[in-house]
Image (cartoon, rainbow, N blue to C red; front, side, top):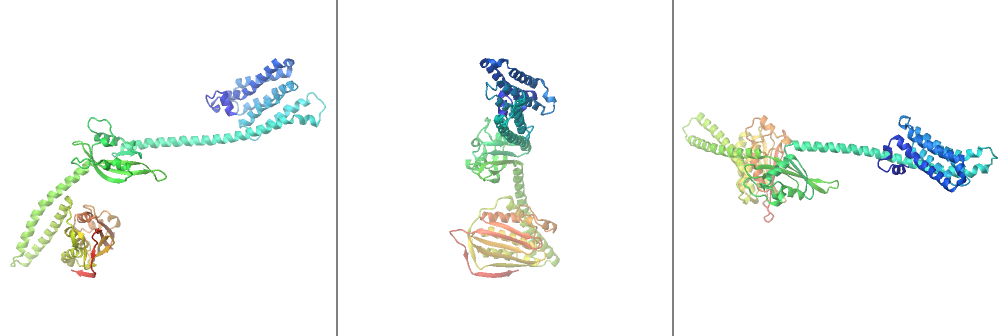
Length: 567
C-alpha cells in the first residue's frame, strides 16, 4: 500500500513525509478513480443503468467523501479520525454493487480498497481485519433485508465468498503491514544509531585532527602501498624542509634525508617510510633532514597497523625533532672530554710527587699517613676521570685475541684484593682452571674491575663477592654476585645508563658518578654479548654477562677449579 501511495505521490518524497490531508486524499484516490471508471463504463455500455438512483447516489457519495478528504483539517483532529472515510466508503460500494448486480459482476470486490486502507493503516492492529470483514458482510447482507423479502439460508450463504475473500486479504495486509512497521521501526532505530555513530565518528575525527595538529611531533600514516593516509601540520613542515629547493612537493625518493650530520645520504632501503612499508617496527632511529643551516635531527619511530585478522594494512610513523638534544649531548661530550684531559694532567703530577715523597724513609708517621690519604683520593679521582674520558668518546676498537678468561678475572680480583680486605669483603672465584675464548682482555679487564669495584663499594657491611665463570652452550656466562645493599628492581633497567645512580646509593652517600656500568655495557655489547642486573633491596646484586663464542673456534675449557678465595 505504501509503495502504491508512493507511486501516486510521484515518488518525489516518502509517503510519511506528506501532510495528513494529502495522505488521506492519496489513500482515497484509488477507490475514487475506480468508481469514476466504473460509472463511465456503465454510462457508455449499459445505457439502462444511467438513470439508476443507486448508481448515481454511489457516485455522488464517492465524490463527496473524496472532497471531504481535501476539506477536512485532519491535522487538527485526533490522529486516526480519518478512518471514518474508509468506513463510509462501504456505503457507495454497497449502492454501486446493488445497482449493477444484474449487469456488472465483481463490483463488490471494490470493498478491497477500504479493507486494505483499514488493515494497512496500523491504527487498529487487532480489530481492522474483523472490522473490514463485518463491514463487507453488512455490504452483502443488508440489501437482502431492504425491501423485506422471503429469506433463506441459501440466500445468506450465496454472497459469503466476498466477505471471506476480503477477510483473507485484510489479514494478509495486516500481517504485512505489521511486519513492515516492525522493519521500519528497526530501520529507524538503526538509522538513528548510525547517525549517532557518524556524529561520534565525526567528532572523534575532529578531535584527532586537533590533537595531531597541536602536538609538536610529526605524524604520518601510510597504507600498505606507501600512500599517505594522514599527515599532521608538523609533518607537513618537516616534509617541506626535506624537499629540494624550488620543489613544492615530492616523493620519498626526492627528500633530502641523511644518515649523519656530515651529509652521508641515507640509503633508500633504510629510509623510514620504506622500512615501514616493508612491515618493520622500530624506535628512535636518528635521521638528518634538510641541509644546513635549516637542517634538523629527527628521531623516527614506526609501528605496523594491522586489521582484525592480523594482516598489515599500513603503518604510523612519528618524527620527533631532537636537534637541540643532539646538539646538547655533543656539547656535553666535548665538555667532558676537555675537562677530563685537563684534570688528568695535574692528578698525574700529584700522584707522581706523592710517590716520590713516600720514598723518603725519614718522613714522620703522621706525614706518611697524610700522603697515603692524598694517594688514595688522587687514585679515586683518576678512576673518575678515566670513566669520564671513556663515556665522552666511543670505546676503542676491540683487539680480540685468544685469551684465558679465568686469568683475566684473577687479575681483576687480585687488583681489588687490598680494597676488599679493607672493606671486610671476601672475594671468591668459582671457575674452571682455564677457559679460553676470543676477546679483548684489556677491555674485559675494565669490565671486571668496574663490577668488582661496585660490588665492594656497595657491600658496606662486608660479606662475600663471588665471580662465577662457566660455558653455556654458544656463550660463556660470567656472574659477579654480592650480598650488599642491593637496589629496587625498577632501578635495574636504568643502572647501565650514563650518570644514573640508584636511590640506595644516593641515600647512602656513597661516592660515584654513575659512569662505570655504562662503560661496562658498551664493552660487553662491542663483544656481541649482553649484560643484565638482578637485584633486591638488602639481598645484594647479581650482574650476569653472556659473551658469545665463535662457531668456528669453540671455547676451550679445562677441569673445574672449584672455589678459590682472594684477599
